[in-house]
Length: 324
Image 1: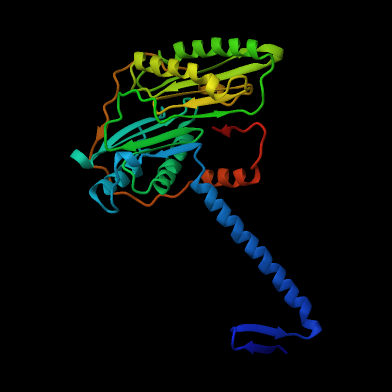
Image 2: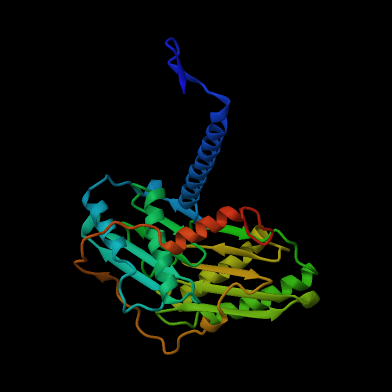
């Protein structure tokens, strides 16, 4: 039998047990320990979900909105319907909703080799996470590896923007750096020419070249397709002088801007079957302004949660990027 002892001063409870019951208590204690560890892991998982963008910016200087305001409702409605347009299968979404100062503009861009279903999942995860990280900022931007989402109360369309920006690099040094850099520069120059010739649906190019010491260098460049050919060229050309600050002599790196980005590696990181530039340029589609259905509650997709849990199990990986 349990013999309780109550310390009235401290309100602590102690139990005096026969020896035969100690094994049972030890088992219960072990199970409670495992339960505590499980809860801790869930907490860590939730923490990773809050910081799983490659990078994000909440633009405090651009103004804030209050909960349940007209702007907030317009933002919720717009984001809830951002990737639901089944007519869009090329990974670029530009929508507007609302009027005057409460008008919200948003751009969603998926990497050019990402398939439509994966693109939708990425943007759905982005709209959940970005609002969690920037709960009352009128302007915000966030990047996953496969997509970018940004929104603002000012016009974002047909405008080349280079800020905010961030760098990432592979920690491993390249072999024969001078030859490596020359091969990389030749590849990037070629990719600029290809990406800027894209149309109003996709301005994207990816390719590879042979580097020194039997290395293959893979590269990718992309602009938001609402940019003109001239603006896309200017945006991509502007990242090349930043390479020494970012990733000079490294086997991989990327520079990411709101309007364009590039990445290179010594391993294939894109789907080579989805890198063709669409032919026949067409007029840029106008931002869609319509009465959208009411917003719904969004959650991270199963795929997004799976990637977060995998990230927990692979916290250190030499081929991963280090943030600048």
